[in-house]
Length: 317
Image (cartoon, rainbow, N blue to C red):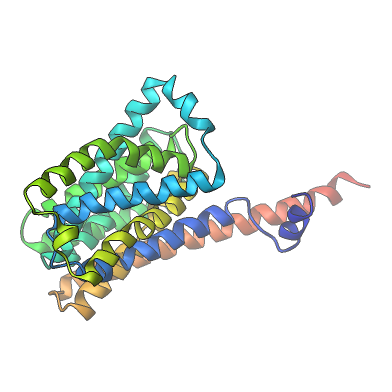
């Protein structure tokens, strides 16, 4: 450990560089999710989510067993409020998954992308209003540009974007709960899936009794994909949770535009969903907002580094 820090310092690593990489990687993987769920279109969306919860739990428990990482269980059992908080985040996550999978397989990928465009805005204002994270002038400019773009995109839809709104709210509130969580990423996600496991097992049991279990009636390829939904789901969520706990919520919120950008491109270019000129304009404005925010962050980072480098010489030797 001691030999690692000088190496990172020598390359100019910022303390939040690795958490930022985690959050960006999670966003890219989420952006590719429609490609995966389209392969499971033969299975009802609710069944996909039930199996997604089950296989995620199996995968996470296997990881915990491999790492022998069970010390947190005794602590959680003595803190019912922590369990209650994670039960709420588990319900939010399940609701978000259900709506998202349904929308993807209903040909509404562009609507889901709009929801994830909105979600960072909700996260930014949560960071400012609830967590008291300070925002600088150019950050405000970026937020208002993005807000204007989302309003423009909403008007271009021609109707209330309920899919987008629900996705935005559930994911933003989930991000807030994970930001303030008292457990690490692996333990927290494991607890969420374990809390949902009894309900999942009841549903799977009833489906089996009615001979309607999606896993037993699906094709071999679909069964494999369902089983893989555990690691495919857990890995980006773990990456996101690591990032969410270590970087400002406002920064995390705006970084999440990566995922809806990929989803939007996939929905339009791969699956041929409609994308009018007004939507393209709104999309470009959002990227302008990101450019403003990123440029401000880079300038501030470079200025801080320059000041840190100047301090030793200013103090004399």
